[in-house]
Length: 154
Length: 126
Image 1 (tube, each protein chain N blue to C red):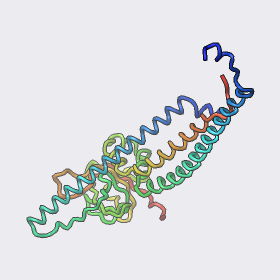
Image 2: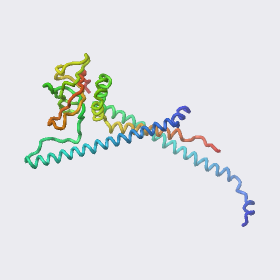
Image 3: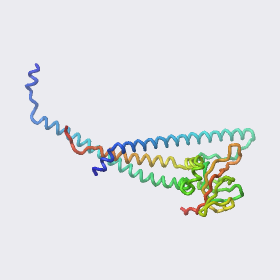
């Protein structure tokens, strides 16, 4: 008990407390940045939609939610494959298009595979970068696609 | 009254022990309050920490963060070669709010433990 008290009273323990507090402050700042960025993106989208509605006389038809999904990765089930694109039903319920380029590495339990190894029904996890801003499609250009066993049902 | 008269006045008998007893009682009361607040805070923050950890595990599973993070172990060379995009995919999926709450609860537990450890139970006189 006395040893525990000495540990809790030590300088190292106090330093740990301050370090955790610092991490919390950084994470709050990060979350605040994400919130502000989301608000600005949503507002920019609403401006664009109003501009479109004014010129075209109808809504763009794009539903803007407040929750932006992961733009640099996806994990989910393949629902459609039409090379070089595959459509993934992400865990968040959104369907994302993944581009399999010449620099995309595709791997499963047996090692490296070709693009044709990606099939409908496979559970994959991929990360990469969004297609360039000049592209009109919201496509994730994958750097790595790993084919995994399907996760257990919750 | 002149200064010499002040030196002739003796304090009432038992005043010293009365004052010391009052000081002791105040110290004991303060320590008891400190212990009560410390133990209450510790228990409450520990309960909050347990709840936050459960929520955090659920959020990590829902966001897919653990799935992305597992790539660092299975495909470490490719992850290192494309570290920027991998880091962004992790940052995008990190459940920041749940993690912040869990860290805050953990900090409260540690701070309450330190507060309790620093509370004195023995009355010490110089």
